[in-house]
Length: 60
Image (tube, rainbow, N blue to C red; front, side, top):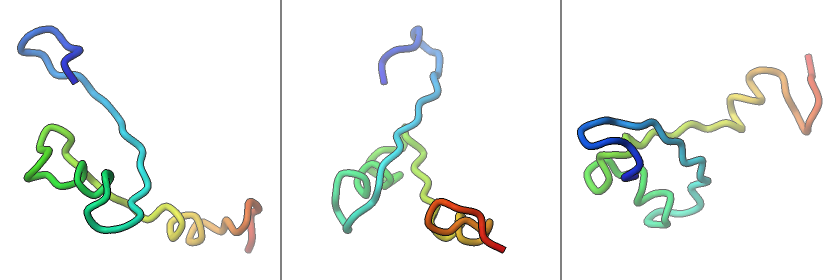
């Protein structure tokens, strides 16, 4: 990101939705292409359903 002092690391977050293979989000998440981002994905919709959220309200 170029915002830290020389030799220092800085934390950053890039929240993106992966829509299709090879889109911008998919490229940033590729650790071979962008190791500095340490890309990681999660399926938040599945996690929300597992926590009992459905269409903006708590269920069960």
